[in-house]
Length: 117
Image (cartoon, rainbow, N blue to C red):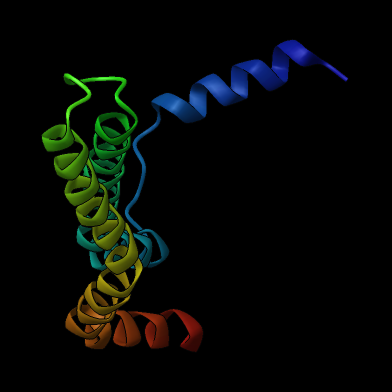
């Protein structure tokens, strides 16, 4: 096996112009339908987890002055974080369904064209 030849072919493939095929267009449409839901879900999940963590730290007295007020604020922040984490997946499912519905016609048409070949 000639590894130099394989490497040269890989490098040549990297620099040759790519033709945009229908399969590539189909993958792009699929990603376009799913991307907003994914970005929102990750953002909400990270923010909710951070809020939950801050609430836990306040409740345990790791941050703040370990008073009753910081304990209550910690509990409130913790509950807000738990709610955010809990509703994250249902919101993702709804947003994903909307995105799929928005691009469904184009994706189905392109898939039919590809499968008819």
